[in-house]
Image: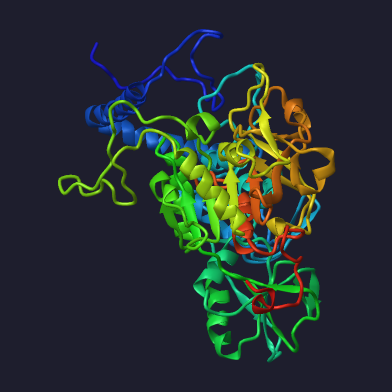
Length: 557
């Protein structure tokens, strides 16, 4: 008979693995990838054009099924409580709203399962058209078969990725909580107190702290090195102090805009402080296939208003990096000894501006994108570090300072076994140096991080103090997603801070993770942002004092 458009009723298996037999060889090229997506789009368009009424009917039925499931199948909803940093909460709410998930703001205090939540907490009820999607985004991904192989990420639990507390509720009482639907997350900045000596802006882990600093980059700011309390406001280490009277109106406006918490000071804090010197930043990019991941770092910096130059091997070879930049960020990319010294291809591959293709060369150009930066490039980085610059590396880029002796105590050559399998799960990590500026704003010792298969770092026992954080490891340390062989990463460092360059006058901060991954792991962004903001105030840096109450001018910086 004629086609009806009705399928065979596939089971709902979000965890369905790749349909390739175990140990089979499969070649999946970029052409396959493009054809795969194109086929899906064309098939959907054809189905819609042939059976428009059926598509509308199915949408209605799916909506009704989702609402019914939310009434009868736990969990019945999620609560995002009022918490210390509400800016990442607002980001989570915004992402849910973009997906059409209904989110409500509780209009009064409520109690569920022996826990009381204040008014202003966000509530996501499952009895809604996109309730199943909400569950998929907010629940932990626990795979029924550890031998599955997945396509791409295996763990994406949004509360973990954003380091936001999200409570899963198995009580139908959540469906009755009075809440006002919101269009987006609300940023509510506030200034407490009546003092006139200045303002202190609390670092509660908001990614907006760096946006605040660069918005007001010409305003002198200092950073407290230890936690204090002013009135009712807790000020963790890393909080800003502004005493310039003429700047305070602009500071108040920015606090409100960015959803931060500030307190008016009766007097300047009498604790150790250092200047918050906004650095001149470059992001280094090779011309290889890593440009996607580099692009996500650029997007993140752009979104938070962090100015930078994008530089390539041609600019690095020209040298004089320290005269222009204080910090160079290396997003994850292939920068092994082999790739750095790779010779240009026999046939040049130019990437230049072209009037016919106006977007070519917009952000950078090269007469030949093949080949590595070579010895000239390595020498330029050595001089940058020996001149007191700071290098921040992520993921596979952390092999670069290790391979070339810029981070001599760090070995990045370790690899996992052939049986190890970890398609980007979320795992537990432990902060070992909570006092370190990289972890300003992080209240908990244990934090979730995205595991992305970077190098396995190791540091000699004598230099263990340079390890800022490590993976917990083991099966219990896998929070969401798949990881086979989880013991192989047990206690491996994921963040290290060491003197950089041959003289040790610079600084190298290595992340084996990718703390800025595709706009997903907002809970890790601050590690990089803190490293950027406090580039010249890392404790124990060779040739530099630890944070004191002296000024930049007195330090000669």
